[in-house]
Image (tube, rainbow, N blue to C red; front, top):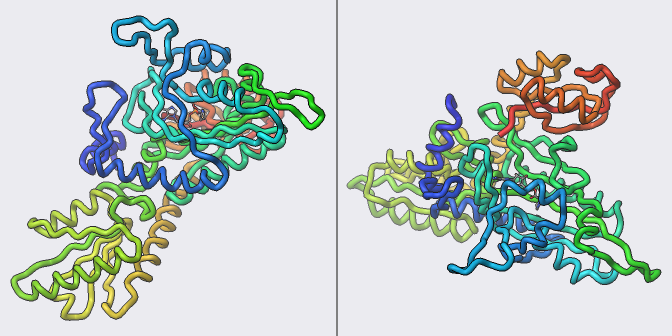
Length: 465
Ligand code: PR8
């Protein structure tokens, strides 16, 4: 892929995922095919969250005084908030913020709901749209002003340890989702200057795009007691004292969909993991004058068999050349294509083509087609996952000097350095290289590559979106 950015825009348009010509910058229209992909991805997320969270829905608008309550939080979002100032021609008494995220909508309600320790823990989530007036260059799905798929979870706990545990659970849930989608990721702790406004600390997932840039695709924040203090959330203990609980929140966005597209796609278009593909199998009848009836009845029989086994299948019986149908199935990323023609039927077989490798597989009509499809889907996801992880792992390079790290990043790779962990040193590194410290991972020995003090962490440096 020579020019990733161009490829990405083209594939969104040609595979009819989004129409980004909507006349407001940073906002696009989900087209039916894209909407289905989005639906199946969010369904997978919901399945994972529903195991221990309840889904809710809070209002889009937040009163100015609630938004303004948490000083650090509001400062972080100050420049990104859209405001509703009028109802018709009447100026509102109090401005209403359009949620950039929902802490300030949800936590005043937590203060009303939480009375006693028996009300805890609370684990809620919602999948909504949020709005951020992003000043950086916007890109469909990657940096948008209307985040259409903002999946945010909010939890409240009695103890600090429970909140710590919940951070780990959030990381586990997101890892499971990304594994299902065959998206590779790096989990790291964001440096303090890059954490979520108001959080104690932020754990982040980054993936690696084909153009050598990393994209933050999910974050898990430990909020400590900061928001509880601000919003006066208190519970009564067994000893009848009143205490502040501990909170976490974590979120994903349209970027997950962008990552599925960017990670697996190729020059022919989308390549989708079967689990989220809008159409999983497309059957293409190859019609000649002879043997038409046999072909059509076999097509019908196989379509029914596949459908009855719970797969999303379509028959492409449009009156156009088979070549055009193949081209479209490839562009749409349909995992499996089945051609059924008179010659193959005479030989008692059909031909399957898997989208990831474009390998053709002859299948005898005596074989168990459903078993074969299940095995193929599993193998395809595994192959896609291995390929993507290999690319990520192969591009994380340990370096000893800042100059080397600069070169690594110029090469479209991620540099791993030893770092003392001190804010001032980190900020100097960023300033000198013009690059971002993504985050830190496990403790390490040796010396900081910049200041020479004892190194505390491995830090990753990358070009980010
Ligand atoms: C929170 N509160 O809000 P976060 N376009 C697309 N995706 C985006 C954009 C954007 N402009 N901005 C952020 N994201 C917390 C957690 C409730 C949930 C994505 O956290 O500000 C990023 O992938 O870190 C980010 O990880 C996620 O939204 C959550 O946003």
